[in-house]
Image (cartoon, rainbow, N blue to C red):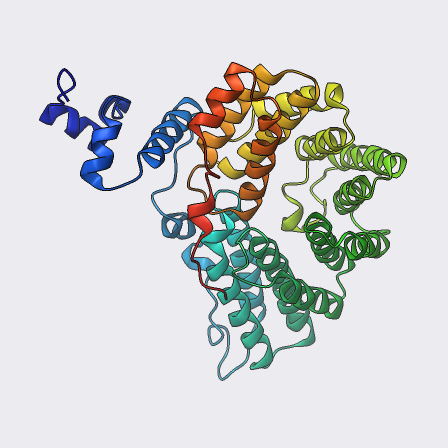
Length: 399
């Protein structure tokens, strides 16, 4: 280690991240021996840290800290809080809905592996509350709405948790609850989420059927909900190879989200689960459709526009959108630019326990390997040799 001997001050700076210091590459072989860890893992961790700082992504201290920040005291359930005995009142139902939205906001910054146990536990608790208490018909409908929203979130989080819970069962619970509540828009959201996941994981026929059912269910519903379903319909048509239907549905989705933005008033639809459906998110789906259909000249500008102003705290989504940019750039025969985007993506995703991110990172690695004769691509592949997320999803118990 001659010429590279660190001082105690150097070590302190690494440990405290003083002045953004990380161990230089010359120290990593020796640190790997001392710490008894794989040197490649240290190199990936160093690259991830530098990437996060460059993008100004600050990881939460822990999932518990994020949950504590979004689940405030007034979101707790208190079945005995409004009356006596086992009667549940309106304030309890509204507390459940606030709690669901808090968990939904947590999903913006936490991956499925960090959140699934909490959301499934809350769903079970809410179903028990509904089944084992007395309530008016109106309160019952609100409780069922909360259960439907919570089941949709639980199913969605489960799709990102590497098999730790069965999304099929969770989505089915939600569909049943939403229909009992008379909330067709929410039932459509559940059917669309379910079908979208199935189509992405190989059951294309069933996935298309469910998204089409969602489209039928939401007819006449809130225009923003219709836009969400149209975008999902575009995607499953895209996977099925129906280019004309995919592009038509995507154009419809864009028209609908523009109409929704124009008609926003104080009396706009109160469904909080629609909060994220906006033009930027629909442009990402439009870009994904164009990428899948090998239209990179349309996809890349859309993705770059969204990524330029995207909230960096939403690290998983930021990196997933980067993954589509990588594939589109490779399709446009721009491997050097693709390598730069892939480097950002891998740096952000390192250590995030997300099944969707793992799947996309493997897609990107496969795509890059077809261009490894390009020095910049080979450099990225050498730096991120193994799937960067595998450790985060390994050896986790099923729920």
